Figure (tube, rainbow, N blue to C red):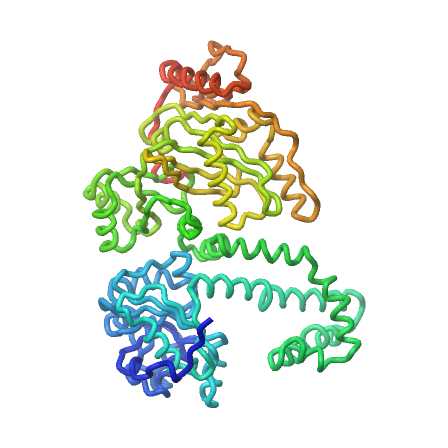
Length: 587
C-alpha cells in the first residue's frame, strides 16, 4: 500500500486552480478554511441561495456562489454534500455546467462506485477522503498536524488526476499525516462496513444493550451510564494511542481476564456470520439501494449487479445509463442496433421497449421526460434465454435447476405469443454451463442463504451472458414448474432457510429427477376449457379468468420438449389473446 506525504506533492498545482466545494457542513467548512490557510486563493463554496450556511461562510470570508454558477467557474469541484443528495446535484447542476476537462472530486466513493453518478467522460474523477470528521480535519491542521487521507482515481481524463489529488490532499493537511492510495470500491465498501458493524451500528447497540441490561437488573441508571458509555472514550483513547496491547497493559488484570473470557460470549461466531451477511448486502448494492429508496432516489441494484458480474469476469450485455446525451450518442454509434430501453426498477417486462434506430430511441427518451434517468439502454443480444433457480445455505449451493424459455419473455410480452419454459436435461451441455456460471454469479454477489432466480442469454456465437438475478422465487408459476420436476417447493424451502437463519442445520428434501414444461397464455375466453388437453403428463391446470395454462411432467425430457412445443401451437389457435405490456405498473 503506497503512502504519500507533503514531499511527494506539488502544492502549487492546487494554488493555480479555481476550487469550488459543494456544501459547507463539517467537511466543507474544514476543506475550504484549510485550503485558504495553505495559500489557495481562488476558492468558493457552492450553496443554494436559501441555505442556512450562506451567512456562516460569508462571515468566515468564503465566497459564496450558486451551484450551477460555481460549476461553470471552477476547475475543480469537490462534492461534500450528504450521499443521498449528490446524484441529483450532479445531474441537475454539475453535469450540464462543469467545464470540459475539469476535475470532479469526492470524499466518499458511494455514488460513483454504485453508479448513482456517472461522470462525463471528459472529467477527471477522483477521491480525497480524510479519515476523520471535519472538525478534526480543521483542528489538527490548525495545530500543525493533519488527518490521514485516502486518494483514489476513478477517471483520469487529463492524465494528471493523481498529482492533482495529492496537491488537494496536502492543501487540507492530509500530506502531513499521510495520503494512502486505494480505490473507490475499497474505500466505499470498507467505510460502510466499518460504520455499520463497528463504529456506529455495532458500538451503539453494544452500549445500549449493556446499559439496558444493568438498568433492567435494578442498578442505578447513572452507574450504568458511566460503566457502559462514559468509559468507552477512555478505553478507545488507550487503543488509539498504542493498539489493543497498550490498552491491555493499562487496564487491571481483572478487566483483562474479563475481556478474554466474556468478550467471545458477546461477539460470537454467529455475530461474525451476521457481519459477513452485512458485508454481502453492502457489496451487492442492497444497502445502498435501500438507503437511496428511503430518500426517493433511483434504485441501484441493476447497475451494481452488472458491474459486480463484470468485475468477476462474467459476460454481460453492454449498457449505459440514460443520462449523458453525449455518451449515449457514442453508445448508439458503437453498439449495433437494436437496443433495449428498460427501467432500472420496474418488475418483469413492464416499461421495457426494443428500439431499432437512434431516431426511435430519442423519440422514446423524449416521451420519458424527467423520468429518463430511471432507465438504462442495453445492447440487444439475440439468442436463447434461460433461467437458473437455486437454494443456497451458508454460501453452499444445495439445489440448482436450469430451464429454457421458449420465446424470450420480453418478446412474448411485447409482440404476443405463448409463454413457455421447460427444465433442461441434466448433464446436457447447456445445463452444465448454466449451473456453473450461475454458481460464479452467486459467489461474486456474496450470496449467503436464500433462494435465487437468475436469467442468462446464450448468444448466437454460443457465449453465455448474465442478465440479472433476484434473491426470490421466480414468478409466472416457475416455482410450480420446479416442484413438478423435482418435488422441491421453493416457497416452502425459502421459509425453512430463513427460519434456520444460519443458527441450525438446513437440508434440502429428497429431489425427484423428472422433467417439466410450463405453458401460459392470455385467453379470449373468460373461462377457457383445457379438457381437450388430456395427455397423462399434465399435472397442473391454471384456474384464472382469461388465462390458459398447463404444467407437464415426465421422466423423458424429449417427451416434455415435444408436448410443450405441440401444446404451444394448439394454445395459439384455441385460446391466444394479446394485450401489450404496460409502460408502467398499474396502481
